[in-house]
Length: 219
Image (cartoon, rainbow, N blue to C red; front, side, top):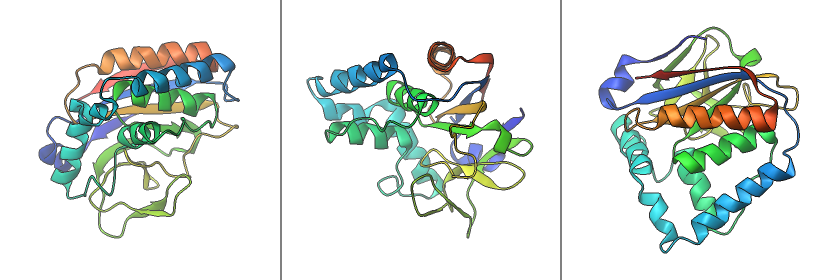
């Protein structure tokens, strides 16, 4: 699939880089082993000497800075990695959706990066990562309509379908999904993206019968 970073977004957030993974998968309930990995990561964070320090990691801070540069308040519109970390710090567990979504949430917390997840059969044409425009919105997963103006967003030929804050219902992964695109979003450069894509490949193979897996780093 084709993907590009818009020049306007790149100008305002010059360190933006993406790590794309596509795969054929079997979407089903998460096995006990994957759920155990999620619980282990929760415990690892909560047992840190200063658990809240995870919110000041360089990758979380880079996401906040990029949102500010694009004109969005990062305290109102959080990157999904920060939102998941705050959920864990508040004593709540990872949400349990299905094996593919749960893998992506695990990777987001591990990497401290937002990860967009899309059903490839619901996408039309190539994807552009750009700044949201006035009056643009979509229904976020489990949310009301999301105001996309000033947010970094993914768009296909149909229109906006994802952002580092919340993806849309239109392209979300369901029990019927067999082909996915998952995108790590880094606003602090491409450091670590290759290893994160490899980690995703391993998890998709192990927990989702992942096949025909391909990855790409875009800067």
